[in-house]
Length: 294
Image (cartoon, rainbow, N blue to C red; front, side):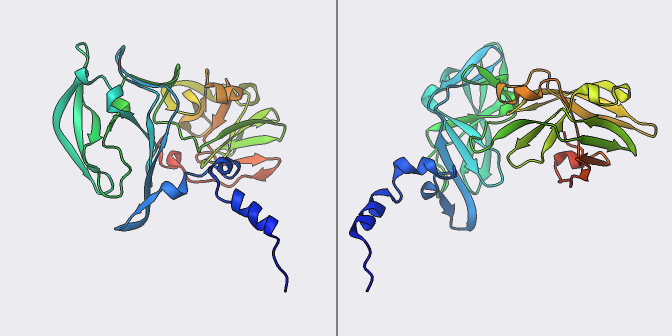
């Protein structure tokens, strides 16, 4: 009978599931710290510590400043930053009568913020007694992102929502030919693009504006924000048959990770006739833009 090597068994015992080796594998959440809800199997919520310095401002006043935040993850939700209550300027907090109920987290108690210059109604919340199965966030507070003036990770302003460390953005120069067709007309043709690959999103093809039908463009006043790329501006595009509002966008000053797309333009793949890469039509994926939400 074949016997397993005691040396191999010993080596296996000393390496399997060791915390210091887990970083070598896929960067999933710490799965053995996730507790699912008994009443809805498959729905999960968990937290991860953030070592970044995070700040929240109302006007020019800092209302929270911490290096001990939690990133709260929850099924079907964007990540949310939670701040230790000790790192929140409690003198700015005013108890509110507003509460909300959530089966996964419990009762949220809201607070307004008054800096003496600016009053923000119901701008913060906390869970004093989290629901069973919820991660331990009783000693933490979060803020309504859109009601705050500015958010910072270290000294860089961030937008829209907390950045997800499990999301990646790769901007890769490509010599593949990209053609964009809109209303039967070719509105872009380039071999000098930058392909942007973002976790969970369709590939975006950023092209030099010189390789587009710039004569069809008209500047838009609309802007949007992305936590991973920065602030984008837009162009309307008018073909022989129709004017398309906010069809093209670009980042004049992208964040560092997306520096390669600076000044390049991108078309809504969901809304043009088609995009060809080396003559092959790229399949469309449904996104919020498919329904008119940019």
